[in-house]
Structure formats: structure tokens, C-alpha cells
Length: 475
Image 1 (tube, rainbow, N blue to C red):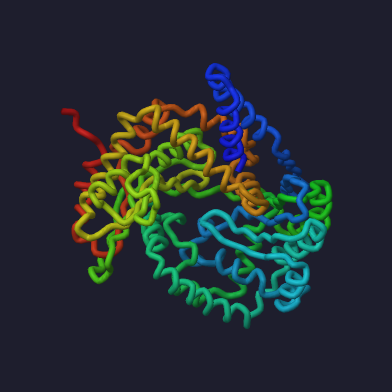
Image 2: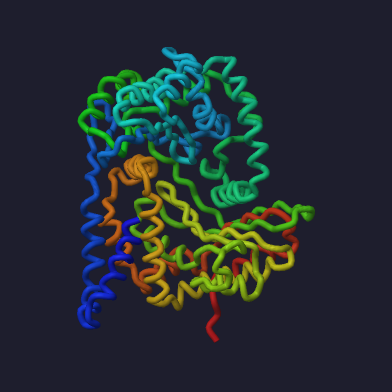
């Protein structure tokens, strides 16, 4: 929220300064104040203990904190035979340990007034809690018990099996999730990233306790785990607690991280035609970069230039993005959003579209034309706007101890360190129109896309015609 504060301070300068002083103030004070703000955030302290477990924290002096275990293990580390195991483990995390029954675990968390949660992605599994800072020792011990001593009772496994199958049915109704799963399936076909996080129903019906234990033993290793915390946190105390409670990781799961199997990208398409559906859902993407690649930031700026729009926006047609203006002027779609999904060594850069069946061809042409325009005729004005918007979005996403803790854990696994905000700000500032055009030509322009389309998609042109719109012909 500090950006809003800067705007308010700049407004006061306007009413109190001469024009000459005002010009100087606007050029200098906001940037200095912003840099000071970014430099004065709490230090991210990182400690690696003997087992290889990394402890990272930021102390904001709050009465509450968020603490969690970030594990470098998700559906990407599964095979076709055990796909769905990582997500199944997440469901089993709070079903009781060798020390606590499920009821005892739930009562303990509720009596502390804490919140316990977990999620699984393609590359990470996370268990975290939000609690009072004074209760940090109890929560760390509880998280260590969940990660190291989950009981995986047969009765609980059967109950969760049915829960996950119901969850899969619910996700089938979320057409955005369905489209992105199909997009991964065609873009990374034949590789672990092409599989879904939940796994196929056949696997869910057959997963047993032995499968869960094997996955934990193989992947829940100390060097692949980060204990992250943010809020009111004493780092030295957190290190002592980790050395006290995460001892089994050192005894049973020590070892170096496993090498990732490269996931090749394939320009291709998948179509799920259903003319009874009212709208078409389409994702189109090219292969982008991994988290740590230098081109990731320019690609994020390019994605911000594409932007997003939907009919519920209060601004209507008065949007800055060219694609948004065209969407309104020509009634191209109900909504669209640009995305840049990153993994360790690869990613997907593209646009997700929801449109009427008779507008598919026009909407797809508009998207691809905009991609080509940014690759060949991007302007400094739109890059500056996109950079400011990207900075704002990133900072707003870190509003609270939970997103900060999540950012710490994810970055430690992705980069091996937490990128300071002032460094991230400088890297965004270094991007200009030439940088954006260069990365667009390298990753997007005249490259084979991956396409996933669901719904009444008869008008979606055949793949070779779509591929031919990935470049422009000079006249």
C-alpha cells in the first residue's frame, strides 16, 4: 500500500510548491521514498542446519505470524503409475499422526486460534499455519509432526479417496482449470508436467498406504525442504525449534535433491468440442522461461502489456491495453487474461480466452496480432505503464504475513534465495521497449504455440492456420 501513500504525498506537494520546485519534487522525492521503503523492509534471514533443512524468516514485529513447510515435491516428481500421490498426501496431512489423532490435532489448532492449511502444485507441496507469535513453538512442533509422523490410517485413506474423487468432479465444472490442464497436457505431452495435479481417477482408486510412505521417503528430504516464517518471528528461536523437532529428516531422508527430468515443449493442440456449452474456453501459449532465467522479468512485462479484461469491469472500454480496447470495440470476447506460468526450467506464456462460438476466429486473430505487434513495434509508453502496474501487483500480492511467507518459501526453492524487493524493482526498471521486443522475438514471434480449446469450438481454425498467424508479413 506504500504506493498509494506516495501518491497522496505527491498531491500535497502539488498544492504547496512552485512549478519549478514541483517538477523537481515529483522527479526525485517519490523515487527516493520508494527506494527507501524497499530497502527498509525486514531482512530475510536464512540458516541451513546440519541436515540440509533451510530456515528462512522475516520479522515484522507483529503479534501474529505465518509459518510453513515448503517441500520441493509435487506432481512433476510422480510417474504415470503414482500420479496423484502428492495431492493425496496433502489430504492425509491433517488426518492424524503417531502422536495425535485427527480430533486431537484439530482441537489443538482451534484452541490456539490458529489456521492450518496445505496445497499442492506441480512442483511444490506446502503445509502452513497462521497463529499468534507466542504460539510459534507449538505450531512448529505440530507441523514437524505432520510432515514426519503422519499415520496414514487405512480408514482415513478410504475416506479421503472418496473426497478427492468428489473434488475431481467439482473441478470438471471449473472450465478455466479444465482448459489449463488440457493446455499442460498438450504442451508438455509425454512428460510429468503434462499430468494433472490430482491424477487420474484410476490412480486415486488404487493408491495405498505403501505408495504414500514411499513418496514421503523418496521426496521429503531435508535439503529439499524450507521452513519459512513471516510476521512476529524470532529467527534464532525458529532455528532452535527446527533443530529440535525436524530430527527425523536428518535420520531417514537425508541426501541431495533429485535432478529434474527436462520436460520438452511440443507445439500442438487439443480440442474438446461440446456444442451444448454456451461459451468457448481457449488457452494459447508458447514455451517461456523458468523462474531463475534472466528473461522472466521482461516476459512478465510483456504479459502485463497484454493485460486482462472482462465485461464486468467498471471501466468498460476505457482501458489502457490495446487488446482490451479491441475486445470492447468489436465485441470479441467475454473475458481474456494474459498469463506467464513459470516452473524450475520452463514455463508457459500465453492468453486464456472466453468467447462466443461465432467470435472465436476474430478473437484469436486479435490476440496473435497483438503478440506480433509487441514483438515488432512495442512502445516505451506502454512498457512504462506495464512496469508500474507489474510493480504494484507484486507489492499488493505481499500484503500480509501469509503471502510474504509463501513468497519466501517459494523463492528459496525456486531461486535458492529471496530476491530483495529493491533488486526486483531495479530489474523491472531495467526493462525497456527494446528488451520486451527482443524476448518476444526469442520466445513468441514465429514460434509454434500450444492450444487447448473446450466448448463450441467449430470455428477454431485448424492448427497450421493458427501457426501461420505467429508472424507478420511485411507489405
